[in-house]
Length: 75
Ligand SMILES: [Zn+2]
Image 1 (spheres, helix red, strand yellow):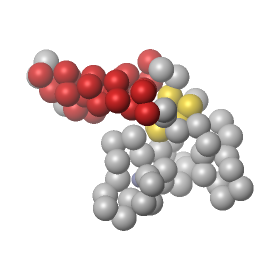
Image 2 (cartoon, helix red, strand yellow):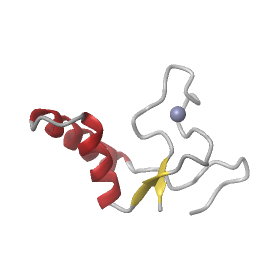
Image 3 (cartoon, protein in one colour):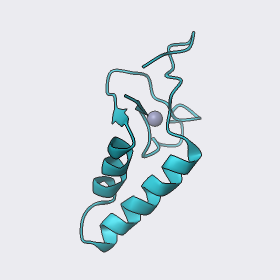
């Protein structure tokens, strides 16, 4: 876990991991679960963890609502 000079985490999920996590989330809905059940477990299985103690990691800082991957960083 590392932060840049602004206190932002530097190891947010890659685009490939995110794309697969979204797919897992939608598959989870198809299976009768919530989007986040699949989305979160995919990120966790790739070594990421959701941190509630770090600043928002959205590109616009949550100005248009938080992204599902907000605060997920490499554990
Ligand atoms: Zn956010």
